[in-house]
Length: 347
Image 1: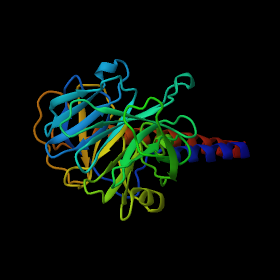
Image 2: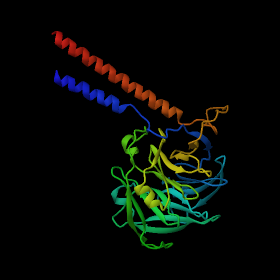
Image 3: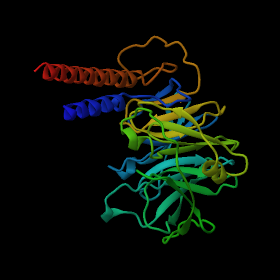
Image 4: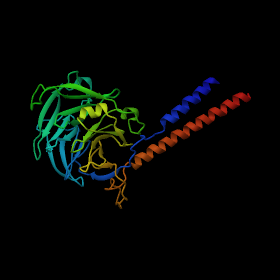
């Protein structure tokens, strides 16, 4: 009998753990800003907002010539593209300095051990520039996978690693960066950040709630954010970025059920967040959190979400239905177990 009781307890715990739940604070409903329909734009991994629209990067590795920097207008239409002078390996994030310079973080490294990188790179694109310049760097303790880039107020970069288990590590150049160095400028570890735990549903469950996939900062540098596949964590910057994210307590905004959320940016007005999922070409939605949902305009056909429409509803509904299904199955199993107990007692 005790074996059956233990079985019931395990099933009950599984049911409770399996039901999806959102973060406790900042649970916003996103709205669609615009949809990127250009077939050249796929697998977006980084995003910043500008006065005229957006700049985005992708990390597709199937054809190096398809890895570009995309300039979009406010309706998500591509206005121009910038290619890399040599093949980019795995661009994962970008940041804009105070003077409008773009820094693209070519720092992804999630391949097998035989193809790990000996150097990582930051690409610098001057305002209005047509050719980015490469700056190579080396880790002091071996290769790391990373998907997030922040800039201190003086423009110096901070790379945030993507760790599956423990805290994310922060690296910065140990000396002044130099362009086009084959061996790379050394980095040194300057700190770690352990993000608070949440219960936000996402495609990768608990791992997705711990791994850092993107970063953002306001134009004035007063706030910074790190995101995972599930949540955004935001800090106020009073002295410097490093101190803020290693000693401060972040505000949490849930980003539930995004397909593969790897990008985060602040809108130009600094209110809320913009996010993009790493998805195939043809219907990538830039979503905004932190603003009241507006009435959905009429739509024609079965295309992607229109501007202003609440997004991620289908994913949330699937998650909710899945949770209901798990709960119902659990209750059925528990009911059968109780019935067996009663029958056993009568016997």
